[in-house]
Length: 149
Image (tube, rainbow, N blue to C red):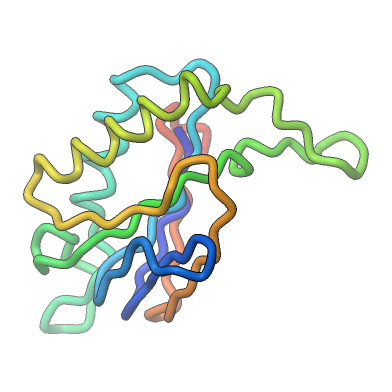
């Protein structure tokens, strides 16, 4: 699994002009499922995201997590995180999981975040979405469950 985690003051996702998910302070998580991902990747990523210390403490140091702060997460599926642009000008998405495999793992990731006590809003899987956010910092972190970066 791959994720882009952005610290936000607020974020929302709209589908067909209607808001389907909205949070105040917390993290916007763009999540992409790879063809080789399993439930273990979901578990790793949920634990990493929930405990990632990207929020300031009383000394303004990044020392607090979503769980520490009691903040929310907005999770949006994004297969394009698996786009490979090393060859040519058109991204290849051959390493992205197909929808039949990706959707259950996306849902499992969301479920695992919620089981940790986080309030989680979501986009809609396999829909065209408009994502709005107010970056806080900005702070943007890249994660990969296979630890490729």
